[in-house]
Length: 70
Image (cartoon, rainbow, N blue to C red; front, side, top):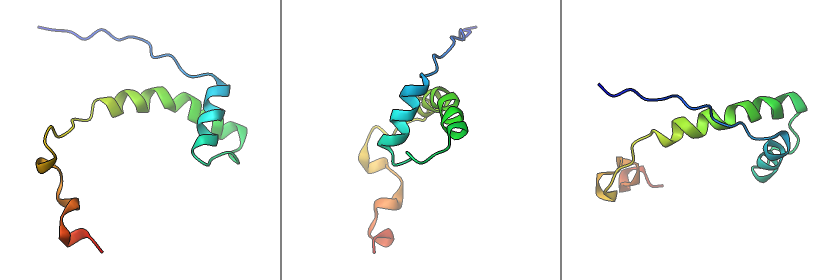
């Protein structure tokens, strides 16, 4: 049986979270929201890496088909 070891993910600094917010058009967020963003960056990045990607673009979801285009 294989067990996964849990490693503590480093949270970004407040300056890094502020820079992230500015890059994504969120420069007007209040400081408490920037702090919340800072605490969520690492877990969201970790779980985002767990999403399986389709190895072949032909196996991608059907949202690219002509039926979904305007």
